[in-house]
Length: 302
Image (cartoon, rainbow, N blue to C red; front, side, top):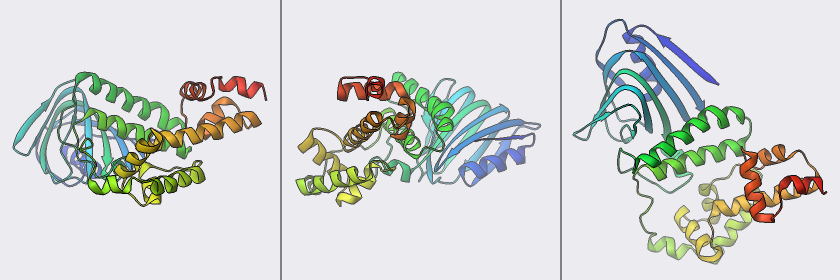
């Protein structure tokens, strides 16, 4: 559900931002501002949109989360680690790493932000850290923002009560963010990871996936069940099965969806959503790749 706050007072604007992003001190600002902030919160992540006739500067203590942004209008300024960064309309960015205090300023903004806690990122990949504030290219920046808008405005509101679709959407957001901003995911596996990537770990992981495919499980959950790190888990799946843990999970869920279609346990759209697909077209493409027929044909021919 969207929450909207409108203020026409600088101190009130400061309080709204303080509540959303953590402890900050107001350094300066224009008189008689008007600010509108709309927020959508899904579990531990939040989407905010800030707009209005307002200029202010704040000093912010180290935040607990990563905050990524898209500047739609106006000027956004950040200073951290001795570096000044100005973000112009159309640009996407990382504001500052969680451990770093910073100074931020806005002037007549249309600023959208996505807040991701480290714990949500850790469900996808072990202990990743972002190593830059700018996306790796304009193309990936545009794809990231398009994904954010689609998830924020369409998928998450529509499937708020569906834990599998919501979890898949959030992990897609994390994966797209990791593909957009420089980070530490590409460091090679350690000797411990290579040692742990053995068939016993794989068997534990496969058994856990097949026993829990109907629930919201992440790569971190599978790794814990296998008693290895996420990186060792990924290495084991790649080494012995030529796939990834989450791709294997998707295959198991497709098999369950196949059985539901054969039994007529709902429409194609209902079955797709039951097994984690927000878009029936994506489900149909994956299903056809796996079974060489359409899900609707399977449903009709039962």
